[in-house]
Image (cartoon, rainbow, N blue to C red; front, side, top):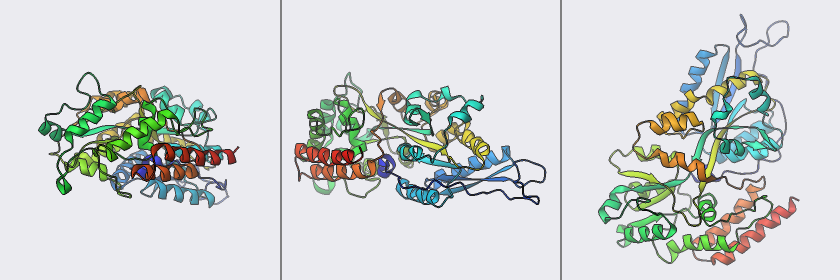
Length: 434
């Protein structure tokens, strides 16, 4: 999930070329229209970046859509992995063959929308009285705007919470996270201490921590600071509050030895160690629920993240967008609308535990449905979640941050020195862009 959460790369340099014409032209030279007698169907391309189980779910939804719209055929082009998929998407756009409807990680709309690649959804929404935009959480809609206009809509919600191994807590006689009157950083550290035991290969750790940007945001926000300034023009990750926050997190490993070092490149190490009883707590989101459910005997649940000066967690999205140069915008809108419908969101929530972006589904079928875990923690997080500092320069900026975070995590730099170097490097990038 690392690339899933931090994928905010700059997709600059894209050529603004039109969609490929996918409708056969009958004799007489006029394009066929969807649903006309004897006409060829309109063919749309839906671009996704999912693993096989979600691809199969999308295929089932597309089949249902085609049954309801016999004049439209949909081809799914899928590539697993956000980074690889976005590189493929860039290639398609540059070649003049963008997909009609595309799935994006929330942050990708920024460079795409700013370069005119995505359709402004406002006119389509204005003409469609059946689409209830008010049903989508307003805070999620804000993430999907560029210069006040909507260029995408959130198909799913992403939040971070704490997954914990109940059996490990029970064996140590430790209360579950947040079960008491408070659940603070000090409570978290004490819980980690009580659940860390053993030596060598048999060692059990209190928590697994990913020490990189997206997973560090909540700790910064909880201490009333951020990576970027409010106007997103300057890097402020070297503030006293940021140094304090990341010192607390770093010390959990280097000073307290309550968590193991993360293995570079190991995609699901945290959730795997939790499932095997090696770690008791792990910060993650709804996307890992399906993995946890693959072990029916596993005793687990979710809790809010600990707090300090305030409660805060990550609030993000996975989005759908339409190509600005699509030759069949109305048909593309019908597909888009179907994929964004309450019906589609209920289906994906029930089948794959995808967290809905529609209030009616999140607070209805999703929250009230049968579940092994406390989904209310995820839904409540929408109210206090914060959005990441997405900026167009993130492709270059994120590498500077990663380099310094890695040095801090392994003890090769102090937190203060590493964060000052990170801020200086990032601000040089920001200065170049002004």
